[in-house]
Amino acid sequence: MPSAWPYRPGEWLSRPSWEQRKKTRKPAARSPHSWSNMFSDIFNTYDWDETRQRIRSKTDADVAQALQRKGRRSLDDFMALISPAAEARLEEMAQLSRLLTQKRFGKTIQLYAPLYLSNECSNICTYCGFSFDNKIPRKTLTDDELLREAEAIKKMGYDHILLVTGEDHIRVGVHYLKHAISLLRPRFSHISIEVQPLDQDEYAQLIPYGLHTVLVYQETYHEKNYRQYHPKGKKSNFSYRLLTPDRLGRAGVHKIGLGVLLGLEDWRTDSFFCALHLDYLEKRYWQTRYSISFPRLRPYSTQGKLNGNTGFSIQPQFMSDRQLVQLICAYRIFNEELELSVSTRESEKFRDNIIQLGATTLSAGSKTNPGGYAVEPASLEQFEVCDERSPGKVAAMIAEQGYEPVWKDWDKAFS
Figure 1 (cartoon, rainbow, N blue to C red):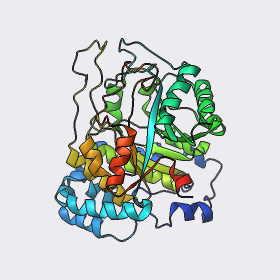
Figure 2 (cartoon, rainbow, N blue to C red; figure 1 turned 90 degrees about the horizontal axis):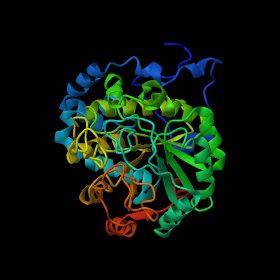
Figure 3 (spheres, one colour; figure 1 turned 135 degrees about the vertical axis):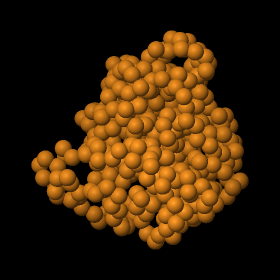
């Protein structure tokens, strides 16, 4: 590995809080060529099957050591915490996760709403309702429709909005996103996007318009199988997607959200690689904040699907609720500063319980179709929503548990 490379796999550095680091820490000096070293250099030193076996070989003693460790946990500790051996210590993990979450975030839960701008997509993905080969009506919101949707979301109480599109660089490219963000900026203090991966200069162009956060999910880190799930379109380029967080960090985006689609591949192995990615990013782009989301594979609408009516054209590897709790607790114990987000894909019961175990961010009242709030409620959804409660009811549930619902972004809430 080049001597200029500042990272060793599995190495953790003790460090102060994010706020202290931002004030006091200076970036390491880099050679003119150091930007050529990115996450792929680390990723390529790992083998999927070997990593999977390492996780499954962890023992109860390894889990106990990870739980008892003082200070920052290592990637090896994270392996132990997501291993089958850790299932027997889930109660202990949950108690520690709850303690660490309240220590860092207090008893608060941030709320946000997704606003779907378009279901246009130029990719074929074997698990998604927006896939190019789905014969469905396509829609991209006009200015008037966008503002009507925004007004409906604003009336629910939200000040944090997530803009979501299918992946179409022509119909919903950077120019469309600039315009959409500029229209919404006077109405919302925090604007995030979950769209197709962009080039570094395109992300940099969006920041002055009001972009704060970008969510980008690798879907799976299993490179060989990734191409089976994404056979056509720009998304089939595994490496381009893998290096998106690097481009975000270099562009100066304030916060980066990571995650995998839980159910495509072995969730433990995929989650380790996601943690490895996070580990690298935090050390390289130290002024950036990070979040992790936990989208579980769910059936999509089969309207217009040509290859059957099951809502799946793959064989899902579903994870149980108990395993998802284990994963969320593992991330919290691994990294006290992470924002952990749980969407309306999950059930009411699960979300009611998880806010005391590590989650910091919830969506509520979500519509996963363009125009779903006010313009065209009956259009095709990207995936099925499980928790259909209104934002008010979710906020009331949070308050009943002794927590405070936060409708604005963390930075302003904690400044």
